[in-house]
Image (cartoon, rainbow, N blue to C red):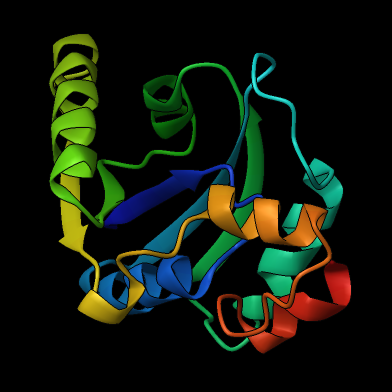
Length: 153
């Protein structure tokens, strides 16, 4: 069984995340959306809210499961038997950052492959960080997040 992990903070989930996942799901038997908890990075939404939000967004995707994890992402991959890690690439700087992480992950656990999926041009400027800034300042984020996620914000 080909299992992939799509890790991230998803704080909040964006249309760019949804695009990457929907384009990758046909490549695998199962895709686990992993909400990584990072103690050095304060979150905007609770992990429970993010999990419920993602479950609502991907309710129509039977091959998708949402889980919360802590610690090294490659160790979580081993725990869930994922041989692949999906990463979205929006910009050249994303590629440089993700390439370095993929190389370190490969050194730690060589049997886990990183799969890079380039975002569609219309989504390249959307990031959770920018969406959080708009939310903090009471702006309208509806064009950047999936409609199923709005009720959680």
